[in-house]
Image (cartoon, rainbow, N blue to C red; front, side, top):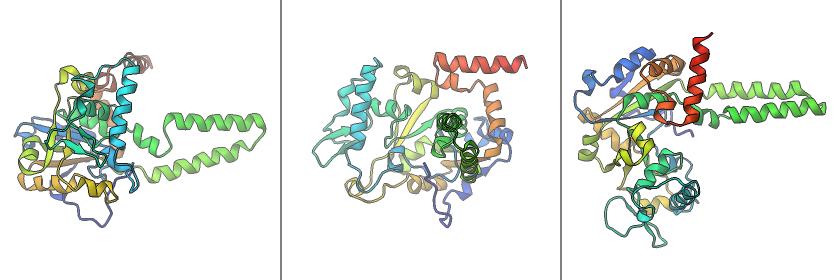
Length: 319
C-alpha cells in the first residue's frame, strides 16, 4: 500500500502544490469555477496520503519474480467470475485479445498479446482488481471523496472493521477459555498505537489537464462510454496509462516506473496540480461532500449502500 517517495527525494510538484488548511478551503479550491480551472477538460484523482506517488495498483506489489502474465490472468479470472455472477462485460468480453499494432497492446514473451484499452480492464480496475491503469474522474468532488475513503488504508494497517472483528472474537475465545484477556487487549492497543504513527498527515487530490497529457507525454487517456458501465457513469471515471517504457526489461526484474516523472513535465504547462488537506479535516470534508450529494450510495449505488446511508441519516435526525 505504501508507495511514498523517499524523504530526501526532490518533489517535482512543489511549485504546483496547494496546501489547504481546512475542508472548506479544500472544497473552495476544487470548485470548477475557481480561476485555476479556467481551461476546460481537467481530470482528478484522490489519494489517502499526499506522499504517495502516482503508481498503478498492479505495480505497487510487483516483485522481481512476478510472472509477467499476472495482469492477463487477473483479467481472465475477473471475466470468469463476472460470468458466474451474471454481470455483463460490454463490448465483447473476448475482445481484449489482440494482435493489432497500437500503443495499448501488450506483448508477452509467451506470444500472447492483449489490449489494455478494452473496457474489461476499466471495469476490473474500478472494481478493485490490480491493473496498470490509474483511476481518475471528471469530477473533483468524487476525487475528494476517494481521498478520504480510508477502507484500503485501514486494511493495510490492520484496522479494518473485519480485522478488528476477528481480534475481538479472539478476545472472546480468551475469555471463554480462561486465557489472559487483558494481555490480548493490550496487544490491540499497541497495534493501534503503531498504526497511528503510519496515518497520513495530509490527503491529496491530483488534477491533470487531459489535453496536455496527450500533447506532452506518452501517457494515454482511456475513456469509455459511460452509459454502458454503471460504476464509470456514476463516478465519471477515466484512466491514465503509460504506453512507452522498456516493459520486457521491467517484467524481468526492474522496477515498474510510476507516472510521476512524465506527468511532472506538465508543471511547465500549468497542466497539473496537487491539492492537499490535513487528515484531521477528513470528517469535516465528508460532511461537506454529503451536502453536495456526494456519498458512497450515490457514486457506487446499491440497495445496501442506500440502506446504510438511510439509517445513518435517520439516527442523526432523531438524536
